[in-house]
Image 1 (cartoon, rainbow, N blue to C red):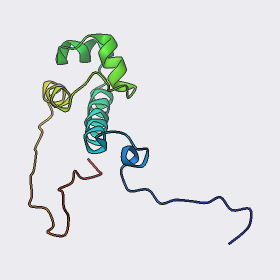
Image 2 (spheres, rainbow, N blue to C red; image 1 turned 90 degrees about the vertical axis):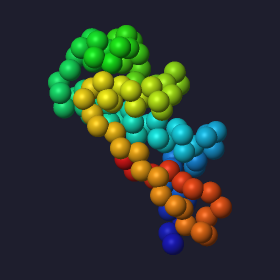
Image 3 (cartoon, helix red, strand yellow; image 1 turned 90 degrees about the horizontal axis):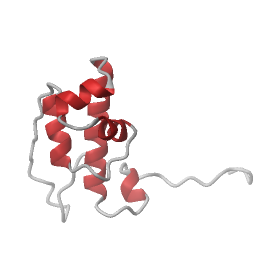
Image 4 (tube, one colour; image 1 turned 60 degrees about the vertical axis):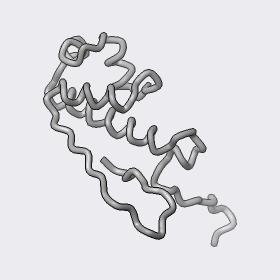
Amino acid sequence: MDNNSIPVTPGSGNVFADLGVAQPEEELAKAQLASHIRETIKRRRLSQARAAALTGLDQPKISALINGRLSGFSSDRLLRCLTALGQDVDIVVRIGARTQPRGRLPDRA
């Protein structure tokens, strides 16, 4: 190894857990849902005002959501936004591995 190399620590797959955020699985799920909302708005070429009208949110909340400021959003609220934007949402629950003490949320959408 080179003396000038930068030490690297592999991530867990959940940046929120790596940063020590409380409830990292919930934060990751919210970020993934917000990403889908952002992509849906972009793909449909909706203005923030139009997206607000469709979702029942006001334009500043749409702006916050698009910019990743999710503190005022629950997962349930984000799911309702997705369906209001015409997206189908499937939630799948599986039995976890016996070797894991807890279940997990996947790290990808």
